[in-house]
Image (cartoon, rainbow, N blue to C red):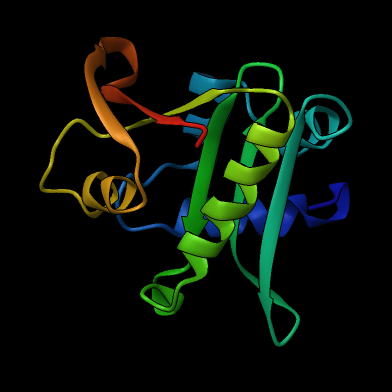
Length: 144
């Protein structure tokens, strides 16, 4: 992912059906804008995109400073094709290569959401730690 990808990445993120979010919410709740994202990828954040016919259809990012897998999003019409798994693996491997023995992410605490089962199917473990202000549960993955 490069700074030039940020408009398309935001378009993918706000189009998700589960855990949907608006541009206003991203800015007000997370202080996240195309400019702040472009700045973050200059330092400790790194991301990967998946393109189909020149269009970004999915992306994932992590933060090497904290060891957090920060976001993964795939356009609904491209779900269930292995894109999310591949992007998650890219971030996972990079975070482990950055020196972390344990990495983490926040996702819904509702096991009825696809993300909950998806992360578990990829080896991540729910910790039971609920982050109320995020309405999310912390998941962790240990380096093998």
